[in-house]
Length: 150
Figure 1 (cartoon, rainbow, N blue to C red):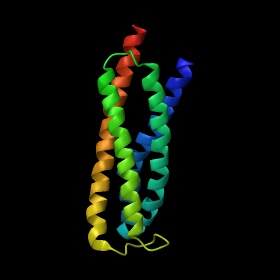
Figure 2: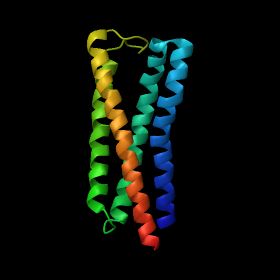
Figure 3: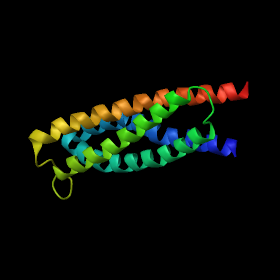
């Protein structure tokens, strides 16, 4: 069961955290350059829904990992990281709902520009912090696995 759990943890992190990194680093800049920032934003509005759902699934799998290695080293740090990831995911859902409400019904353009961009900035910061905490959680988890092997 351990190998299956670890396999699922790695797959979940690659999809969620790796998907975020790839999208932010490559897709958004390329889309903005090719189609403009407004058109790229309509794609992002839809992609982030899927990315947020991947986050929920990944958090469930990471919780399984936490519970399975509860007595492992750095437990408090791992729990703190997971909790921050969970709260961050809730914040992203909340902000996404607000941002979507500031777009037209088809989500093709922003209707309420003044408040949209300040909330969008918070969304970007929250996403980046969540990604960074995900890296810390991954490092701590790998250290736990290594110490259990030795």
